[in-house]
Length: 176
Length: 87
Image (cartoon, rainbow over all chains, first blue to last red; front, side):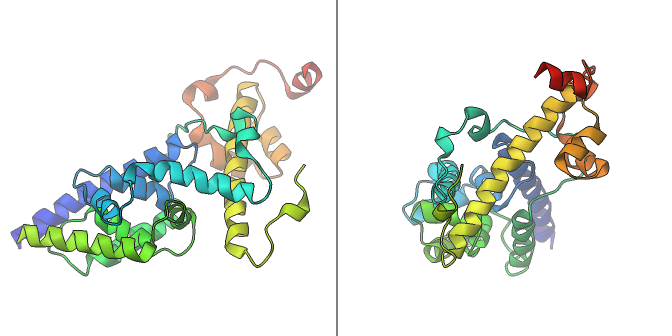
């Protein structure tokens, strides 16, 4: 009972780190609100290190995710004949956003991540919320910037989802 | 100018939708930068809203939180007409 309470308190701290981290990632990229891809970047920065481990399990370098997100945008525009790099630097290099919004808000894909995380957390209450939970949720998304970024990295989403679950199981075994 | 023939074929729906998302992101960045500059130059929210084709409330709701206090406090240097003449 006491252990569960401790885990829930730890989860609150993790959710806070995830939300503020995702917002910071979005703002640095010149975007007003965080999407699923920014939650994935924030998960990589969590101190538990499980998100990074899940990526490494499928042979992917977690440090290349940010570049992959940018590449999937430029690839999408290239298919329409628009070369982002040829545009005025003012338009293609993002200017960091500063915000004094009082209420936290995300893009719909960010909301979907948080909702799926909540649902996933009800399945196994014996381990804290970890970065690998975020990876598992995002690996199950079929469309969107995050899914296309993983595709750009050459990652098989099913394999990444399985790797995230293996990482969570390994963490769970260590705890017991 | 974008040649319409270079648009992704309709059967590549996912690619076409990804291009829409990318274009929207570029448009959002451009809108935020331009609104910030307009406020610095002394444009009113009503003028910005009219130029963007949205309501004053919508323009304010969309952008006010992303303007720094410094920008918001910037003293209007000249009005819109004078600005246009100078440009």
